[in-house]
Image 1 (cartoon, rainbow over the protein chains, first blue to last red):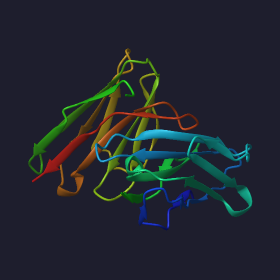
Image 2 (image 1 turned 180 degrees about the horizontal axis):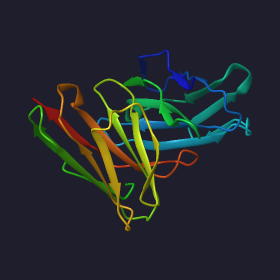
Image 3 (image 1 turned 120 degrees about the vertical axis):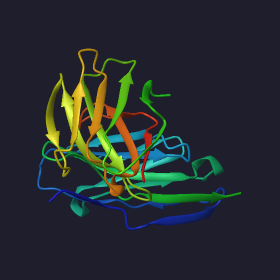
Image 4 (image 1 turned 90 degrees about the vertical axis):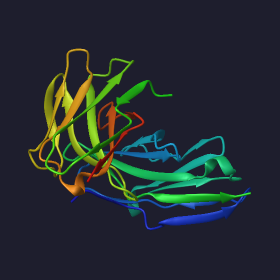
Length: 113
Length: 111
């Protein structure tokens, strides 16, 4: 079965705190792709990052970083020094040739000034 | 700004009616997918079109159908609307192995 779990439904942090959003996935495919998307209150999903199953290098982009661990089937997302503009719902997604793209239930992040 | 547009923005329909939603992209991607996002949930994959043919479908009944046109724009048609069809409908250009560019969505309310 293909599945994405985001155990944290809602997270609230104070501005400038670091926050990590968890993502655990399930798939039997050996080739797959992992994504993170941001959905601000306006509703439009915004692409943040894509990782393929053969690339376990962690990535940093400004205040954002991603930790891909195949051994634990996790693809966690950390925001450093959070800002109010980071408030949004964040979705982890799994792309496989069988089920196309499957999204997790999302984590709603609130950054309080 | 993804260059993906959807119309209409909002729509109210009555149970049993039919609806057509539209989606287009400035970029010319040849793969388009449609998703249903119920309130408080993640997007659920409906189907995908590649070069005008359906090449993948999620767990949705046949009353959900689609079209892709030669210019890669797309339509989602839903027949015999049910109350549970009330949701945000998103289209996205790009395939399962690439980042997808989403439109702002159409909010459908079925009464």
